[in-house]
Image (cartoon, rainbow, N blue to C red; front, side, top):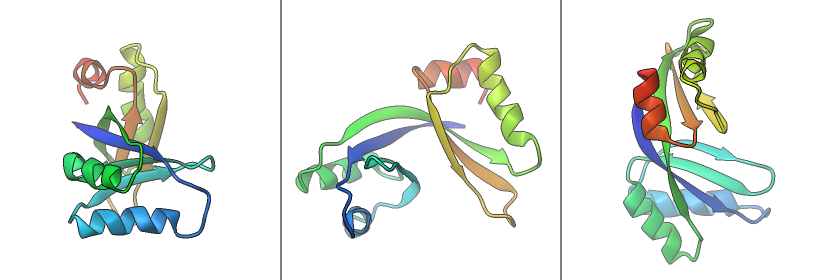
Amino acid sequence: MAIRTELTLRLPNSPGALTEICAALAAERVRVLALQLEANGTLRLVVDNPVRAAGALRERRHKVSETDVVVAAVSNAHGALASTLALLRDTGTNVDYAYAASSESSETTFLVIGVDDALRAASASGL
């Protein structure tokens, strides 16, 4: 488990908008660890260097907000995701949003969880 900084910005609904963001981050040698793009254009990013990434995106005139999220590497076994989320539920933590990714051959799922207070949620749940 870790507390990471998530960057959020809005993209226009146009061809290449996400490509431009990823290319800008690549030019700054920033690795994208997780992303979620919603139909309304809201893009959430977890990157290895949020300070550099936010700066590069702001230089390109994107309005970027930063928030702490809980990031957990969870077993890809059946039921492991439910068990992890139950830890949060049992502390009374509401999950505002979450996104995850894995491959069928991987033993680990990378889970990003947005909550009101990431530090409290992580320490109370033991994640």
